Length: 271
Length: 317
Image 1 (cartoon, each protein chain N blue to C red):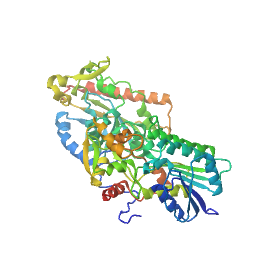
Image 2: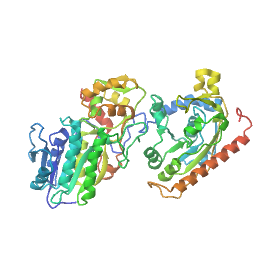
Image 3: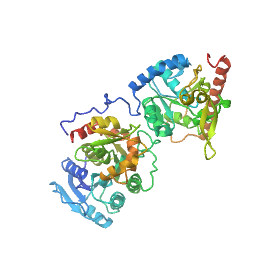
Image 4: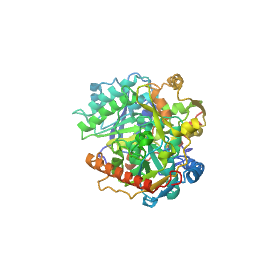
């Protein structure tokens, strides 16, 4: 053995490395939380109720509705939950974001992880982390303003299978206020006829700055009771009918909570 | 398990840096009676270590079968899959697939005395893309781009896996080694990190892993003597960001815009990176790390972490 190389204990994690193997950096999170804090407290006046439902020390898949052309719901949830629970929160995102220079690295430093089977299984199952996911995906962020707060289809219900395989509960979170923060009025058609870039009210009013400037809507999130599964974890596949059933049930619960939050809301700006 | 007699081991590509280390390590190990080193026709002369008998032959089924029988080989450690990375002048397709096919066939033949086979593959089978997992487990389903280095490796691995299925009396293990650095071994990734100006793709800072040559050797010895079966990733503990690695290796960085990556190709071609630099550019953006719980659960721990390997690259200027 090379005598100049210090022996490394097998379980030692490199203390000098600023980020973990997912790319998440606690110093970066501290800085971003400090910068985003005023936006969270004064611009969005965000409130998260029911956060006690989230497990303190073990893993859970936090499932929320998705909204806004540039979704600020992820930022708000991660900020609020990390402060309330004092533990890291990760969020699964589309792999196209990781392929984007700078944005991909920025997301990773802030707890973003590509939504991928092995990643999700390791994060949730092996490491017992808290992971936010938006099953509506881009369907949630690209829907027009007229369809706001109508939860879109949950795709293949992969999120249910992920939670079952990892053996963690699903905790639904209903979020209200983000639809109006950056409403999509219509989408410019691409050359091949499919829908492309969204035109938001923000961009119409503020020009280019409107791409990142959200309206100061009141954001309220309600964390619902966890849903625990009785199936054995670690299987390669789960019965499709159970996945579809659970997926639809969770979507229904989220829709009901969103509707309830909307009826108790008196004003988009004040809540 | 205590063997009645010592093991008689065949090491392929015994004149390459990894093969030579491996043969030497085995020769000095208790419980090993004899080590036969195999090198192909085109390789240069290297002084043989005392207990090692070097055979030179062209890879073909008959010659291998005779060799295995003549020397009563009960264990084979095949380093030929990673051969091209240590700079031997062979066409990669032949080195990786055909030789492995012949070796597996000879080992699994009816009259073969082989009861253990260890093949050294590479974590290069795993994809590096925006949608690949950040920590690859051994069981990951792989669909490499056709004709890529990963596809060639996987094809060679398939012969090894089929040997395990066809010959249950042979303990067959496949060790996917992370990029080698230190201990006289090198790899394309280590070579890039050793450049005077290390390329950084602007906007990307992926996680990478390294494995010290000494640990690669020890892992292969471990798999051979313990008669492991199955596929195992082997890497130094931990991973490191590419920018952090460049700083730790005390190299200067050159920012490459993500759109003009074609400029990197001639540089990487000079490093003799096999199968085109496109794969390397993917690693520079998305990295490549493999999960090592499986090999660690068999009692193997690498002595050098990934950071240790990178520090070693700093000292070799």
